[in-house]
Image: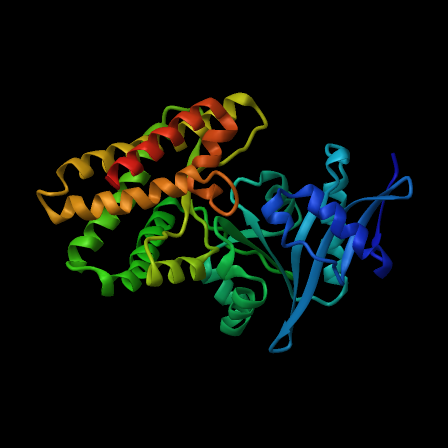
Length: 347
């Protein structure tokens, strides 16, 4: 099978959009529009995949941004994605880009592994500011919807430079707790006892991390904690106007496998964290009349349980999706228990 990678002709934009909508789920597919710039993969005269990109320039530095990358579901497993990523990376360097960037969902190993193989690094904010500058980061935040990208990580490649990846579990846990505590400050104007609320919130986040770590230790994989650095804008807006919305962060195996055992390991960690939230919320509900700590814990727990139930984009990173992909019946049971607990709390 011959795979030809070439620049998209403008009259092919509608076909590329159509394939993109097929490749993504309904919600993600809604955001795929007719591209202005793309590289397409062609097999036997038919477009079978594409990478949609755009180039922005800030302070004289050009950044190529991967907006969408997809392969027609009927052509998965044929090496099309590998060739598309490699060709697009080379094409953007040839266009004079000083850097290249992308946002990828945390568990989308099919995509982020190809970025890593083509010279990208999974970076945190310090590396972003170091290589893109303040205006460059703001450009990514606004133009490329970094503020909206819940559960996504930022991948960056800079011409002729090696970047530091965010691989330190200790620093990532610290960043996760610190940034979420800072973001929850936007909620405090509605809180009677803000310091107690802050302590409860930080304690719940830390407890969830600890439970996930304990369960991860039972598997043969080597795990690391990573905070997803997309979606801060959404978290800030929700925290200010209505409720509690933490930035997402999870335990991730260093090496991914396409096996049932591996999906079980991911699901078990997410399940343990979910059970922790159910027990915490239920106990806090029972004792909420005795102390403000339990009132705050039950309210926060209720909201976080809702995010667990929503196992679709953009809430996948909160754990429900991992349980769903491992065992759908178990997911349904956990979702039902959570719904009943939340309903009982409203009585």
